[in-house]
Image (tube, rainbow, N blue to C red; front, side, top):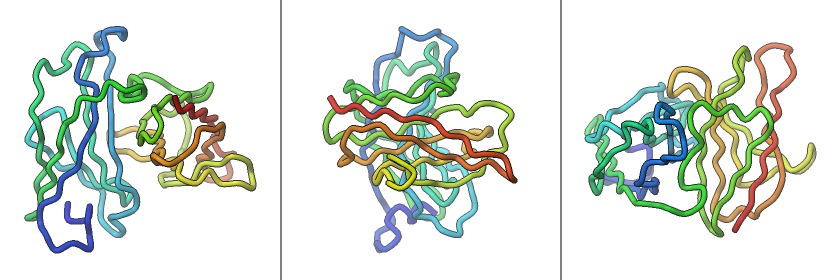
Length: 209
């Protein structure tokens, strides 16, 4: 199953660097949950959603909406005091080694899991930094699961910015993925609602520093 990360390759073992802020975010309440993730978009077509445990309890892998996702999750209070150099997800004869890298750069840590971006999302990142951020969606919506390219205007796509809705953690979440070569700008995500309800639109402000 994890062979999907490099579906054209013949080897059965893969690896990826995963930057996560190693020190606990003590400026947040101790019971808040934090999540950081990496996504390999659209590389698992036709595969059922599934979760794959890793060798370290703070990290898991998953196939979600035809994408492969690696996710770190912890509350502030239970933040790991020590980190292994890597964690491994194994399934179906294939393995993915996740090399955990301490990343103190701006934007290295996701917002806490209680954050709902009803007034917009501000992303701050160093030049050439890849971002993947996950947010709660407002309650009460019937959100369509899927992936959509961000917009700079109704007629201009924001190429390299992807807006995804997935259910990896139960409730629908909004994940925004920004490629490292995307220039700063102001745009938005358009998330369809099921049926005839109008879409959910959320502003996104990307600042390269």
